[in-house]
Image (cartoon, rainbow, N blue to C red; front, side):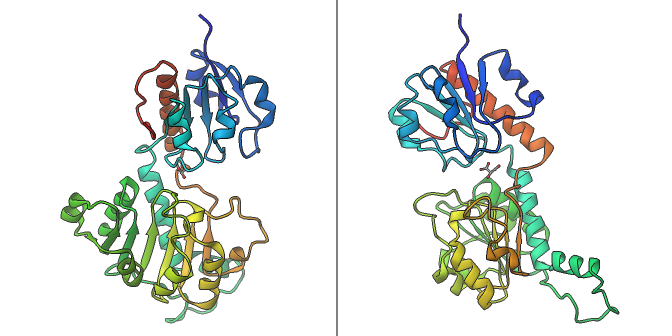
Length: 321
Ligand code: DGY
């Protein structure tokens, strides 16, 4: 029997994708190209499985060219790059990778939170550049985490992992979420509050929502103006949850004290972007899940989703119905 044709949209380490090679005929797209490259078009008529990255747009126009497609397996927990409804209408299963990246993303949230709250990057840069004068009691002062309020927007698995770390640091935990999380409330003393309260009371506001029409542009000028001037914003979700120009204005005008961003709008953020020039903004290039262990696990899960979809079995993690 002929093995099904699968497109992996961009190259990945050989040993990560080795398990796929026995099961399918694999076509690999080019590196450093955002999206499903047109050079793959000759395979569209026959392809049954797509293994995509979060930089690949999968929409009606693409699906219409792939009449035999059974499954799209996204190497990410977020699926905002995929038109889920269009896939469902065509009976195409969409897989994603929740769970396996939770702790890695929560760790990086904490790295950014500590870095901006204690001004680690500016202090380290000052030391490196010879600006480390005699010790003074009032130099490089940061924000104490113990007793501060951590506001979590989006209390899914990652939000809860961030909350656990916050509780260990002795922080007061507030959260806003579509559904209440009684376990987090009981275990961590977390308190569910309206979005406006979260904005007003958080010393650190950490975003962990998926990008949807409801969350796009959620953190705009109006929201930023409600935050404390001493507060920090951490975005680990998706860039467009925050209105970039409004954030620049907030950081320049002192509406908030600083920001740590692992995601931006656009991505990649061009080197000349004003956000890079702001000393109170720290940007990492979407590396929340980038540990050796987690990226391997994400790949294993994406392959398991893909093979299940090709074989007509339920996906271990399916994002659509
Ligand atoms: C995701 O999985 O959605 C992250 O943004 C990348 O790991």
